[in-house]
Image 1: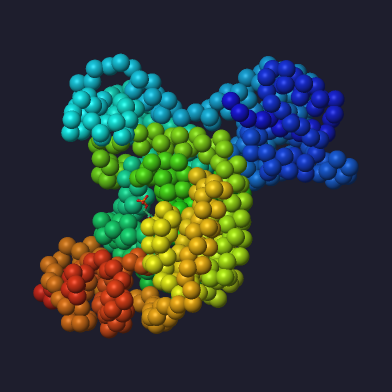
Image 2: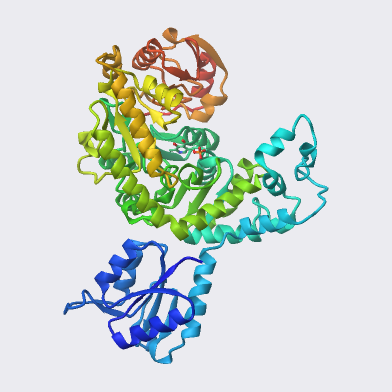
Length: 640
Ligand SMILES: Cc1ncc(COP(=O)(O)O)c(C=O)c1O
């Protein structure tokens, strides 16, 4: 196993003796005699996983100032949360020691129990470097068993000899079929009622991600969001949500029968980018909703945003908690935040009640693999509801390799997440520098991305998300996207009208970033002096228009509806979501009033050939007038 132990002690004799004893017993050890050097070691050597430290340390070798007790250990964890910390001290009286639950073991120096120390460290790291479900699945898959249960391919037997399906078997390989088993195998536990090895894996993930509980979810964060919203909100309860949130949140609101209170995000019209919601607006909206007597139960925010803008989440969580509002953070794009201090704090560390993460988007899990992290001190009050909702949205035949991938992604991030992310950050710097050396492409900085109303909100930019301004290239972002794919075999993450965004993940390499740079250089060279028409106009017309919600989305969704040409739909109520791509944000959700402004914006999008989901040609679905009357008579209308 590859890891290093850091020994920190100002007492040279004791330190040298301990280092020798550990090395003799096979551990790899580095050591120092002061606090600052220890911090440097922790930040520069990602292989350090265990720290043995004295209770008091001088700040530097020569310093008169000492760093004392728990402060040392908190600071170490503040640098790398995944470290295992052990106290190796001459302080014997436990009343002088408080650990705050963060110290993993205690050894009294005078006792010189070196065998014990090694055993404890090995056990601790062994547990972290462990993916119980994956390991058990492999053992099970490799047993020469006859399966008389689902899945029907019976470990691949139905396809491996078939002239029509053999290629399928050969492409995916034997191991995928051997490990694609089902709930009929009790020793592999049940995702819907974990009591064995899946529970064990979830507990390890919970420790890694700093939650009270963690749940593996196998239908993406789309499902994780719906499960949480449906668990926290009863019909009629209200939720504050970003108008720019992922559509799964809107669907969650429909399913729960909740009343959505939309928060307008900041909009950067120059680049067509939706940013965070100003902090002031969030706080005022909470107060406003409470003043109006809304049954406000939760706030859900996306952190970081698709474009990598990071909220000052801790402050917002505190404000919500002061008002007894639960906070869900959609960390679909930010699951790795706990593994590198540049991204701290993760939602869990910031005290949020719930977080949903697409482990598959930014870490090594298979597509659809997601996690729900729970920190809510009141979770036990809704636990049974949560379990029911989890079951309601989950297949009774989950994909076992997907569960295993969550297990392994966790193990990998705990063991090498810090080093991998450090490398990604270096690659990001390098890529920014090379793109900015081109004439027609420029990487946008935080100041370009946010608008002035966010200037006091302590917003940060995640450097692993790189948005490139392509407006000087004379081409549309779609043309560049097409060239990158067709000519250079490079697939980007997303585009707006004049930007493209790429995502650097832990799988990035120097070769990859250099290939991207060379491709952009090539495009620049061949772009000549051409100008693109229409871009400026669409950017000018581009705006997020909002109108009131007149009925709870659930009522409008299930109401009788009819199809009308958009031009005749003014003052009617949308019964389906209408979403232009880009930017992929619903302009209409069920229950929303269709105004002249919204019709104008949709027409502009259509004129420019933007793909619009939720409209058939020029037809849009609206609630019938009879149904509107019924909803009003029954008192289901919502007043502003
Ligand atoms: C902010 C946000 N939340 C949730 C999701 C859904 O995640 P998943 O693809 O894991 O279902 C996405 C997907 O793009 C997203 O951008």
